[in-house]
Length: 292
Image (cartoon, rainbow, N blue to C red):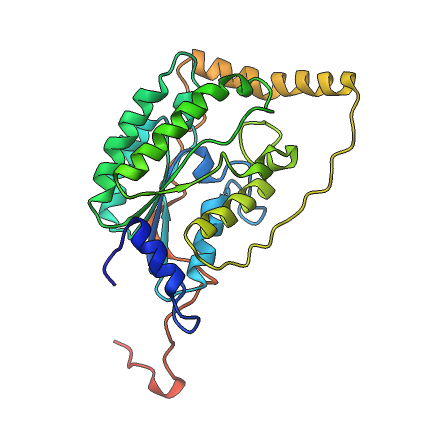
C-alpha cells in the first residue's frame, strides 16, 4: 500500500470496513526524547526497558494489520537539534509510513530558550519527513499549570503549542493534543520525578494518540482513585524530598553540560515485528518447505 499522509490517512482509517485491516499503516517509526522512549513506565519483565505510550500504540496497531513493524529511535534527554541530527537519517532509511515526532520539550524547559526558534527547527524537520508521504504525528506540550517549578514556564509551552499547530497545518501533519488531555492534570498521571508520565499517564496518552488516528483500540480508560488529602506540612515535605532527589540532580546535570541520555542508545533501532500482533498466515504442516 502506498503511504498516505495527514488528514487523508485519518479518513482511510475511519472508512476501513470491520472485516479489513482497521488502519493503513504497516511501518511505524517513533522519534523523540524521554517522553517517547517511555521513561516513567518501566517494564518489570525487561530490566532497564521502558514501555511507554509509543510501544502501547504500536501494539494496538500491530493487532489490527498483518506485517506490521515498529522502531523507536527516541533517547532520553535529547534536545531538538540532537533529535534532528541523530534520529532523522536513520528514520528515513527505515521507510516508514507512520512517524510520530515529539521534539522540543527539553528545549522549552531550559531557561532563556526561545519557543519560536525551537519551532523553526521543528518546521524544517517536519518538512523533510513529510516528503516521504508518511503520516506525521506531532505533539504539543501538556498543561503544566499545576506542576511545581515547571508550572512557571506555562506561557512558553503555550507559545510553542501554537507554533506546533502552525507547523502541522503547513505540512499536513496531525497533532496529538496533550494540552487538551485534561486527565494529565491529575497527580496519578505523573511519575514521582514530576517530569515524566507514570504508566497510567502513558496508557492514557496512547489511547488519545490512537483516537487521534481514528484507530479502534482496547485501551480502556482507567479512572485513578483519588489521592488522600495531605496537610500543608506534608505537601511541603514531599516538595523538599522531590527537589533533593529529582530537581537538584537535573539542575546539576545541566550546569555540567551532561544529559540523562549520555551513553544511551535507542531501544528499538531496527524496524521489527511486534510479538503478539497479527502475523502472516503460517504454512500448513503438510506443506513445509524442504530444508536447504
